[in-house]
Length: 141
Image (cartoon, rainbow, N blue to C red):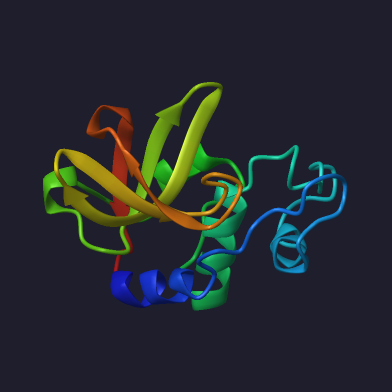
């Protein structure tokens, strides 16, 4: 199932925020899965968890209760060691000001590559230091 989730996420590769108060219609659609009190402006609200939640809801793989909070993904699925990660596993990282959630792409040249939303204000595959990885999770089933 991890690969199917990854393939679904790839469909959104390149989807980017619209500068200013307008939102990309695809990202605005993802925001419909979160509470209305959350600021719906994608340029102000970190939307990595919203993107991951949207994928989980769309694919039927499930989401944690507050999927829009990146750290909550540590409560979903089963724990996997980073050395055993497979493409499409969910990875939570630490970042300045909080956490980030995305899908595992690969380990290469000492970097962890993740496919996720709100990476450079778009859905992208980006490199991260393995030191920032807080946890890796895989769907149970």
